[in-house]
Length: 252
Ligand code: NDP
Image (tube, rainbow, N blue to C red; front, side):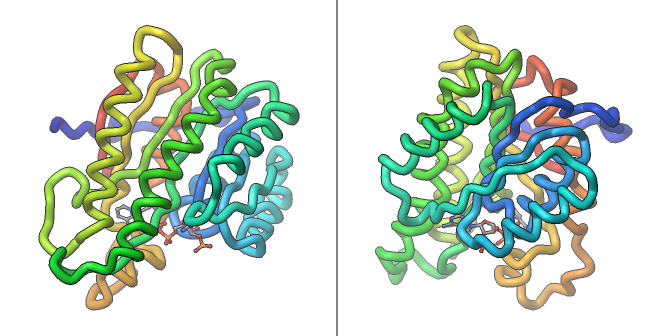
């Protein structure tokens, strides 16, 4: 797999996402929170999806205080959402918004790390539900709204362990391989029939709660903060990446 990087000197223009409606999953914390704030700063109306209402409200307040377009909050637990709730969500968004211009699949669970021969089936299934099945269901039901955009972008969050397998990373690594596969299948299907582009983005080591859990021996501040990697998130979401689809990116 060929890994691409965004141009090193990339500087997004101030109105890059003006008038765009962009949904971010896992928008209450970590990289998703940062992406939501950045997208709003560059002009987007951001739809904040996550499982913890209080975190989403804090991001909502931050966007409003910074003078951004009024966001929307979608409180939803992707580990237990039914197919019907995705359908209902798509209908509700279709009533409220003319179209959807961007979808950042960012929410994920780390699950347990350890050998496959002792992996717990319940945790395995939960990781797959959030990291793989929710991505499918959300995309599947939001595609009609994305089709209405003059150039929508779907960005799926990958990982280094989703590109080359690594022992003891279990369901998480497998779920990220599935994410790469989903991106490739969907990108090919949409390439000649729509203006929607689909790519994966690996943030690489970034100082968040998940990173601190996965690597307790690291000094957290040695890793870049989510704010430090936003150039790649903006590049792939905005028109500067128009025409690029089916590709795997690293944030740095
Ligand atoms: P965090 O754990 O800090 O944030 C994950 C976000 O996803 C949280 O807002 C969390 O909600 C939300 N989330 C988790 N489960 C659910 C669920 N069931 N329903 C709805 N929302 C949910 O992780 P990061 O910011 O580090 O990770 C973001 C993405 O980047 C993930 O896809 C991760 O795999 C990927 N990644 C991260 C790396 C890193 O070094 N940080 C490296 C490589 C990939 P809540 O706040 O309520 O818990």
